[in-house]
Image (cartoon, rainbow over all chains, first blue to last red; front, side, top):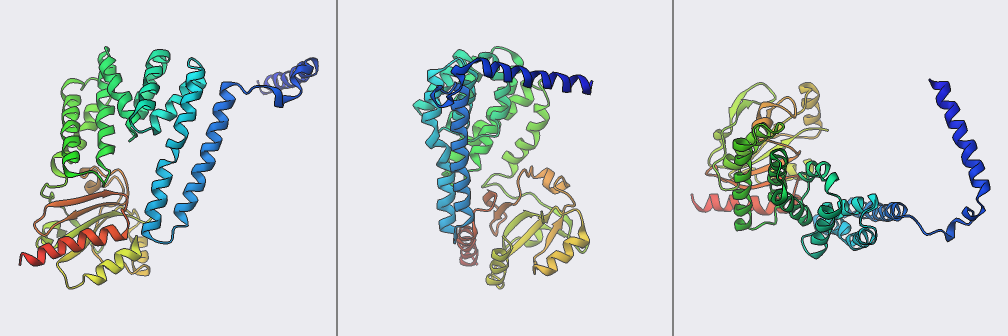
Length: 262
Length: 103
């Protein structure tokens, strides 16, 4: 088998060398217009470079304030590239490069016309590939992802897709709820819809994947661990094996820190 | 994280405040050793692993996760990932003041 593969490999090299030699038009590469895939790759490279520079700025920040600013710049970095990815997708809407570009937009763009356009092209020209996208959406926070999930849920006719998207949208809202800058009203609104969606997963879609089971701890968290709730009791042992309870500290402000050395 | 927590605990030593950890290190002996080295004096529940019973019940998906609870036991702030020392100081000082004013 190995020898066979080596043989094929040699043949390929030989063949491509011949082919290259036979085609002098190929030679001055600079003249050739890059394919959509190459354009996409180039844009990705440029984006990654900008991103690693932004990360460097976070590491080099001297105080909390500088650090916060650097983080904000880093978080907004992808948005600077949305326009160019969208242009690439609009020029070659049916290509794989368009799908990849639109995926970048869905992951990174805030809500608005660019997000709407990206969602429109995805559902128009890439329907068949959308299933794989649904599952990755739940880790996102972008406005475009929300638009994508809500549109998908509206259009879904299959029970399985509906269940998957309901869970993904609930998870998306969970991520969104973790933003410490949300107002109390915004947070309450998000929590309410999130709870409804997770409940729907457990009631209507218990037969789809493992989602109903995954929804349970989320429901516990919304109902017992949201801002404004009375903290649940913790009973356990300290590092010396001595038993103690969280309620021993009632009357004091407590910061609970889930931590470890790693 | 640790240097700020050390200063927070020292600064609020005689105030109605406690920092309580829920620790997910597997090796308890090693953990005690590094606690000593890093002067981590505050108490922790030992949860054994990141999938320990407390972390599991609390649906913890990221470390550190911080919960700030007021003197009455109501959750007032929640952070997945540290929001930075200045923010922590600000919210805790406000709640400590609230607790002292009510006395």
